[in-house]
Image (tube, rainbow, N blue to C red; front, side, top):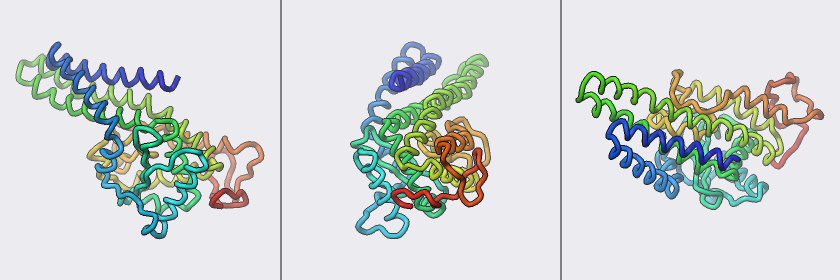
Length: 307
């Protein structure tokens, strides 16, 4: 069902792309838009990981020379992948103060995960384990290809819509109004399709990630910290390429403190509540943390692979 739903949503995004082409250039424009969308999909399939990693200037981690938090982050990711019985992805670090992370790649055999230096500084080892388990869940579910291709088409659609004013503005008032409508409505429709794909997959990756690391509260605690950090610290690369925001574990665009058309993530508190509900009836909040949705400090009596 997930594969079918994803196929239908990607088809809807491609149809939207063709519709903009039809409005701008008639049947010829629709054909060109279709060929461009097909070419974009093909390019994203083979180059999605390199494209996004290059955009964020990610550096692959060399465990033999890495030290401190970076080396431990790589070790944790490797151990989690082995625990999940999946190939170890390439591991990258991004020099960025905003705490965030993402996964990319066309399949588990050709996947990569990346974390920002801000995330490695802000989170403890258990919270990093929760975050990377979430990203590995995306890889295991093959979400990475879907989200990257969707982001690529949505970005191309937004670019095409921006050209509408030039095509429509040279005709008449009606053409100008139509061009303005395309500029506004096309990116909005693309955002709706992205949200339909992304939000459900974030919840599922939270659930599977919690199972991989064995401690839902680790990821819950990390989400709270990352969300607060992202609201305070801007991510300049994400601001320039908002279509990539859905790849991140937390919406990176909130650092600007303004609304945007690519807010594809569920509410952080809803995600935290679902994770905390996974603890089961035998769980006792630690260090005086309140029950019922608040995130307790990690690292108490319950020990895991890094506890």
